[in-house]
Amino acid sequence: MHRHIDINPDIKGGKPRIKGRRITVHDIVIWHERFGLSPDEIASSNDLQLAEIHDALAYYFDNREQIDREITDDAQYVRELQKKYTSKISQRLKESSSDA
Image 1: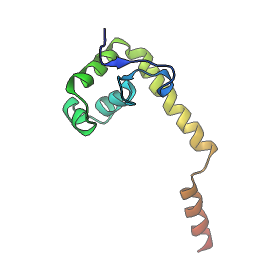
Image 2: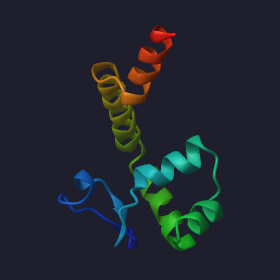
Image 3: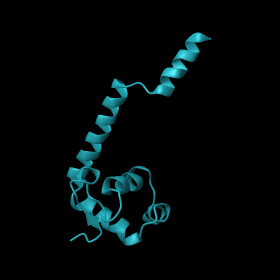
Image 4: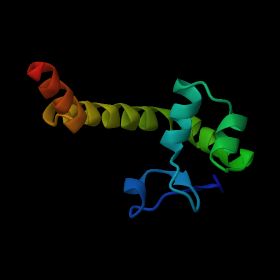
């Protein structure tokens, strides 16, 4: 049904992706829906065919609820990691400001 989309549990955690690439449907959705990039901009900046972008977006709209939930879950996971682990840069900045 989506000839440019592949799902392999051993690649990118089984997330749907562009065949032969590590670019996921999630990536394309975020670039398009959240960052406002056009399909042409996404294709040209990632060396993809326009048909691959449109197929990824069609896959997204066919599975919107699930993919939106996964994107939200991924963002929450990142926030939890950020709370748990202080970045080395942030730590160094904090240390250097307290030394001054």
